[in-house]
Length: 271
Image 1 (tube, rainbow, N blue to C red):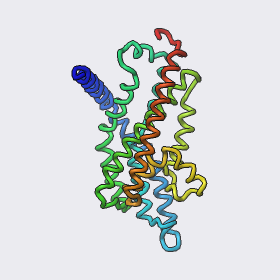
Image 2: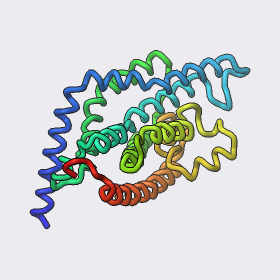
Image 3: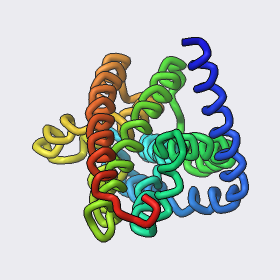
Image 4: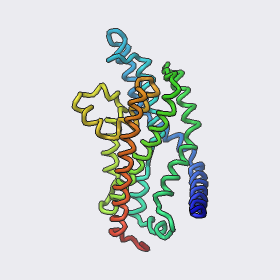
């Protein structure tokens, strides 16, 4: 048992080292990708202007500073949740480049996962620098409650796992379709809307909020942002973690089932 754990540990270290070296080659592109994902920052400017022009200087209790803090938090969390595995799988399956990976004694899932994890270490320094600059420019004020930061990080880890698994499953649809990327774009729109990227979830109609609470989206994006903004409680964080853990288990089973079924369908040369 100990020997098996050591062997697994060596595989993880080697995979992480190789994927980190690969991602380091694209560090300039990583910064460009970060700057291109500025939807939250655009929404921040829109809502700050709306609050400044509203009677009393607030919209539904949110002042310009509150909006700046919330949307800057949303941008920060969304940067940590970036996943592109569906695009890679779509290409590998359609072009047959998945075949050599099937010959290895390791599920390609782990290579993709460690590639994404290692990319976060490339992203973290420029991301924090940009957060500092945007905080200074917008006047955002993050919460002084220290418990909120590890709680938000825990939700981000669970949210990243959930998003990686569903994006992986979407990528596997290329086994049966000409292209799976259109499905990814549709799901991203739902993720952004119900996650709170356009507005805090409490701004939506009540029937939309009732639907959203049954999905993982508000807990992986909106709730960590609310924690950093000082507008969520420890109880809400714990409830969100439990719901995300449940969705994580569901997505794992769905991903595993789709992978097994897809391999039976796969017919590229060398498969």
